[in-house]
Image (cartoon, rainbow over all chains, first blue to last red; front, side):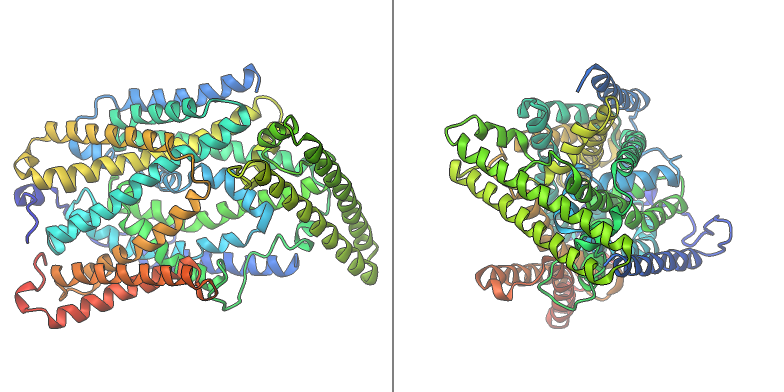
Amino acid sequence: MRDRDDSALRSTRSTSEPHDETPGVPGFRTWRGVYWFVFACFVLVVVALTIFSRVFA
Amino acid sequence: MNVLDWIVLLGTMLGIAAYGTWRTRHTDHLDTYLKGNRTTKWGTIGLSVMATQASTITYLSLPGQAYESGIAFIQNYFGLPLALIIVCAVFLPIYRKLGVYTAYEYLGRRFDAKTRLLGATLFLLQRGIQSGITIYAPAIILSTVMGWQLELTIVFTGLLVIVYTVTGGSAAVNLTQKWQMAVIFGGMVTAFVVLLMKLPADATHIAGAMGKLQAVDFTPDLERRYTLWSGLLGGLFLSLSYFGTDQSQVQRYIGGAALREGRLGLMFNAVFKIPMQFFIVMLGALLFVFYQFQPDTPVFFNQTEWRRHLEGSDAAKFRALEAKHAGLHAQRTAAARAWVLARDRGDAASESSARAAMAGAQKKVEAVRKEAKDALVAANPLAKTKDSDYVFITFILTQLPHGVIGLLIAVMFASALSSKAGELNALGTTSTIDLWRHFRPLAAHDEARNVRNAKRFTALWGLFAISFALFVGFAENLIEFLNIVASIFYPALLGVFIVAFFLKKVGGSAVFWGALAAQLVVIGIFVFGKVYPAREIGYLWLNPIGCAACVTFSLALQAVLPSRTDAAGG
């Protein structure tokens, strides 16, 4: 069973924007860099919460 | 509430709704109606994603939960940043590249129509019911406390959100959510500052000593509901399902000026969501400290329900319970003060014994609170005994100055409207694109007719949500029940998307039947846990298990199914 959505409409809606455009964030040249930064923030938050739990135990 | 509170409340609510309706009244292009304005920037997308996820339950119930059980719930969000990175890197670029309106439209392209319908139907069923709860949950609490008529509160909230969501679609939802989030942030920060000003200097240490500040639990125990491991793994899969496959979220970030805007909007959430939730649960933990020292701390926070019994035939019994609680509460306050003094002196031995006395006093207070709840049930078997949802609202109404009370009630309504709008918008879109247009393929080119139908479906889902909320009052634990239902039905759907993105050789029939088999496995595990409670696992674990089952079954079925059922959509 194939999807019956109209193929002509499909092609008009597909975008031609680049798949991995630059993030345009100061200090970051690639999206991979942004993801690593976000991951580092997450690790930092978990470590901070762990220390917080220990300090106020 | 006085006149000033009413002005603040109605001014913010009606003002934002009217502004959203007026600004987007000429939205007649399908793309703008379903995906929002093409000029939308990452800040609006980020706030919109946040506003859709955080309903009134987040701001009203979460502080109450932290008041009762501490801040361990924060671990539930540990998988969220990781999930958002995956959505940004994998899901979003594909949705943007194909220019789809819904996540399930992608399934139709990649697999076949039956898989698309399966995804869309699962979403509509689950989210449709949830949309009723989004209105009902705050309405029941606010109407109880404020003395408003429940039905009127539900209908007012529902109709208000229908008006601007139907008028402007995604464009209106994005616009209003931005301003509603501003109200929410402003109100919550104000309440937090007022609370801090009323607390003793050692408030955080008292909360810690009472076991309310255990944010991270490393225990590798499957039966514990919130641990670091369940949060990381279960939370990752739950968040991946929600942000990657739930149309109410997908619709928030697939629009925008460019791929970059959607990505930055999601990364904004990845960075700020846990700190924001921490702030909310800390509010609850500090409320616990506040009520340790408050002389008129109630034995039962739903005072409307309690007062009804004080005037009934068992009044003497309820007054005796109040008196008993007041005595024990005074002992608890004295114990807390003694602990603070011992701690300040730096005397380890007396601090240890004072801490034990404080914990003992807390247990006695908890025991009398349980007695009070049992008395409520004895007087009325249908009585609702969960009062943690009333802790924060009690603080708002009794401790905040006028004007700020109106602002905080506006916070509750703003959060209900913003999450409701996102849901209605997604339900209307999925009904139009994945159901109506699937059965009326020739209508795909008639843009005006598509917009008209999207508006009709949005209005219909809104009316359904109102009707559901009006008749759902019998189920006190429905909110938790629906969270568990999400963990039962999301995993198989996520499995379908994982196969779609990463296993290119698997076709539609294999993944369709694989998903159904995985669904049975998850339901089986859930039922087994209910039959044998000693073996029950935390519901977050159903997410990775169900997803893994779907992927495994799909691969196995693809290996044995005839080659003609191979990937259809490609």
